[in-house]
Length: 286
Image (cartoon, rainbow, N blue to C red; front, side):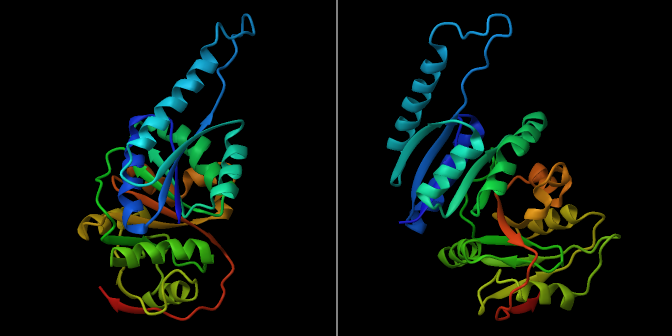
């Protein structure tokens, strides 16, 4: 049975992610793991002590709450609270569960959003080969029947595990997929150039029929989000290049800018720059 691991902290955004994961898990025949990486309280700068047993109580309370949420899920679910650094805890969980997806809720508050990108989303991508699903706290709980895939036109390669996630989502919901490349003042490739990169990447099933759309916009995120709105998309799919995970590159990336503005779930597929040969998908002009 496949597993969806939901990173949770009992916030409204995490609750939305939990509910969305439950919607996906049923048709996928997957179970859900609610995972919380417990961070001990900061010691007082004056005394160096934590008063009473608040730290332990907070952990116990979190565990109790997560167990109750797991018991209330409409799909098979368990909950786990682990201690230690976030990256270490995440790596251990990925090894143990081998998840199909890592799911993370996104807050709409800009300050906390930036902190979440730095402290949660970025380590997810750095330390895990898994696809990451970002769920805004205002996202509709609608299955991915209409999917928009954003590409930048550069060559890339999708690993078998990440490609399998996308293929499974498209197959399970018989989703209508729109491949989108935005022509901007800084980047304007031909349709054939973009399609060659995609066809060689392993992103799509060999027999897939994909609608191709090439909007004009000032920035890639504008074109992508406009296409998503026009197609009434339920899911955005972006390629997350590992070279962008260093320092502030991720925060300036199209991926981060789209995630800040999107009101629908965003699936990040880890990709590399190497380009293996793959059978081409059939593409129809949009």
